[in-house]
Amino acid sequence: MNDPLANLPGYVLRRASSAALAGLNRRLSALSLRHVDASLLMLLNGQPGITQSEAGRILDIQRANMVPIVSRLEARGLIDRQRVDGRSQGLYLSAEGEALHTQVLTVIDAYEQTLMEGVPAPLRKQAMAVLHAFWQSAEAAIEGD
Amino acid sequence: MNDPLANLPGYVLRRASSAALAGLNRRLSALSLRHVDASLLMLLNGQPGITQSEAGRILDIQRANMVPIVSRLEARGLIDRQRVDGRSQGLYLSAEGEALHTQVLTVIDAYEQTLMEGVPAPLRKQAMAVLHAFWQSAEAAIEGD
DNA sequence: GCGTTACTGTTATGCATGATAACAGAATTA
DNA sequence: TAATTCTGTTATCATGCATAACAGTAACGC
Image 1 (cartoon, each protein chain N blue to C red):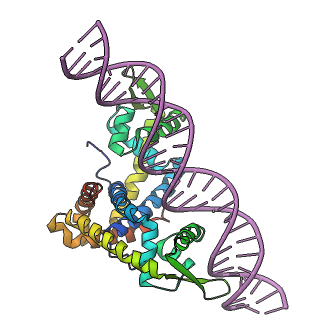
Image 2 (image 1 turned 180 degrees about the horizontal axis):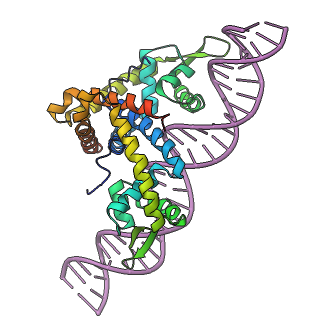
Image 3 (image 1 turned 60 degrees about the horizontal axis):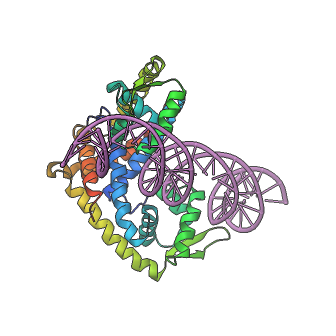
């Protein structure tokens, strides 16, 4: 693969992310979930009762784009809504949602471990730190010019 | 940002990539280009005469999805097609394309440097190696189960 | 040589992700 | 109380990515 873009961190980041996502979605399809759904389930497990807007803010999903996601998950009986306010509603995992969440956890844990094991041991120690550094750096660079 | 997903490499990879892409697209919009277009221009600069299919293979873009990209760039007079075969056609940067390419290069180089500078110095040395490792690892993990 | 196979560019189509604008109802604040 | 902010929602659009199908061309096997 003679790719002159391979020394650009942003490009490599994108290719790595794209490949990682493909693998994850492939595995999650066994649970009829997309990675977005899975991330919401995991978030709700850690922070039950969180608001739809808050969840979107944490996961970096637009308010408007949260609607079909939450609707889909609620239609499947995986999450419950509970009015907390005249305008907001807290989101909770239903019993079925919790059951599925443990399966999600199994799949994701295994996958993330596979991903990490594919990284040469000498680099593994700093791998997460590097990823977080790029995340932060990229976030800071969005607005730049 | 209390995000329980922040210790999953795949998730962090995706967030970093997404943020990095947003910043890049913002900068490229000044040239009326998307990151995909820019990557093709850069590829053609390094490997003039490459085939549309070959380019797609290198950039991991489906043959069918290359069509609108190439058409758009050709319509703007940035690239030329030259029949090399009954079926294939070589792609080249036009004069205008080369001119724009140098601008692209400026933008991207500056951006990638910004990205790198946002990474703490102690990590910077291994940053690219880590990204490549994840790329390779993710690529290998796509088919797994 | 000829038939099978493989490759190229292309069209059409669908799904997923994101972004934006607008709105009504509710809460907060000044 | 009036102005502002926030929430969930609808509608709409652009982009990215995948798949299937097709015609024309090339390469290969015998």
